[in-house]
Length: 193
Length: 417
Image (cartoon, rainbow over all chains, first blue to last red; front, side):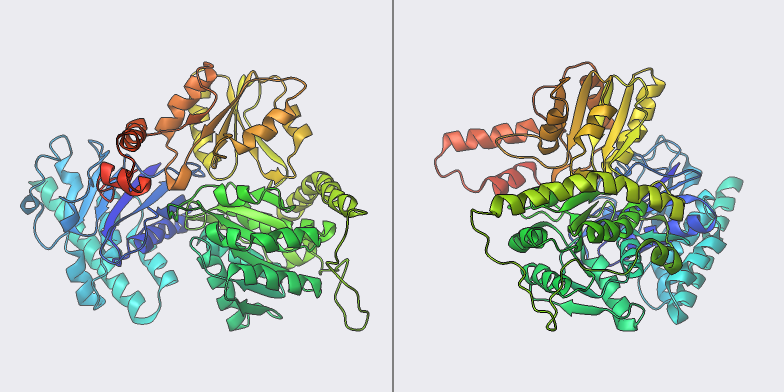
């Protein structure tokens, strides 16, 4: 089982993002379970959503305490919320930020982790460019596909096209595609370093 | 057709396939997505003939369902928490009148303090209203139980409450097999009411009954619940033949072979429990799970038979009766009167507190060793309780307890579990 935890803020689409990821996995014939952290919905408040992916039916319903991957939709959460709780040495992490990973000041949190699994993607910039709205979910899923290989970017785009239509579908799909390429290049650069 | 779909939407699709003629509901979290989806289906014309009636309260929702059902229409509503309490008088009336209404309860805690999260306090509070109560473990089962519920309700003229965990099921997006209209039409015939308000043949429904017959009328409620004990498994069997899925029925046993310890639970928490039980079994512990789908009627004989050979029972209670303890525990003990074994009630997951595998692992090990007390509260923060009790001892005007305790623990938004 592969377990993902998303941290975002109310209104950013964390729940939709987790659902889209589950649909992408479903499209590949896998079992998937997406669910929100069930807070009272408020714009801007810290929210969480979870997604589990497995080859067999998923029975557990507890929150994801030890994520195999962490998706951070808003870097301002990094020092406000216990986003790193339960991280494993081999966990992946994808952070939406316009800057570099080293600029985030996370050295104390990631000492035991694999540096080449901790990546950034300017998902909000990509969303603004392609979608015209600051909703980074689709781009983060494109980046997630490149980072973890758990789903193919084509499955992410298929999930986007099932959920949205017209400009919203096209913009989100373009953002996902750009983020996929961005993270893929980032991984290759780290591997060469 | 297999879909990756939110639990609420899966249930809405199932209800629509049952061709309800009147849907009346008042929005309340976490039930809202179900009736929103149904309202949209009616507006699009996908669900016709059907009248979606916006009402001003839950009391009106159940009252409209009663009127619609008495007039011969297949009626459906959904609610949760305070909404269920607000309609409580009409909930009893629906059962007393023998009207086969189907209602989803998206299980949620009851205030005060206000809490929108999941536990079973709401439906448990109506357990004696005369409704059949079925509890779903997964979105798929919630979907399937609604289709079975209309069959059971209409065959017996008893209303059925399908209980599904709020958020944990209503807001979870998972795989569900949505049946075809032909499948559901083949399983669920049109509603043929036993009694109907018809101007051409006027009758009274809901007359006053005095001491001369009230006991007998009430006894009929028991008789119908006993009939349901036979009908529920029969309908589940027919469902399995038609839809190819084992869904519904009275109980769901899991790894009960030679189980010395049996964990009893209702609803979605069974999934996490089963994962932990698999681990414990792998370590050699003889432990199994007995899921209760039908809480009303309570299947005493089937529970007794399933527990034959067990040395102890751990009852995971998602609600509790202050001053008494476990609500399900009382019925389990009644089932075991002839061959009593210890039943340990464990209050777990109140108001949305996550029931984690880590906590269950410790709890079930303690229970298997016979080390649980007469009433356990899983993951209770005893320090927090002790400090508030100390405050009440120190000052007469200690203030509102809930707010004191929130202040005591500080911000919670930063935590994960």
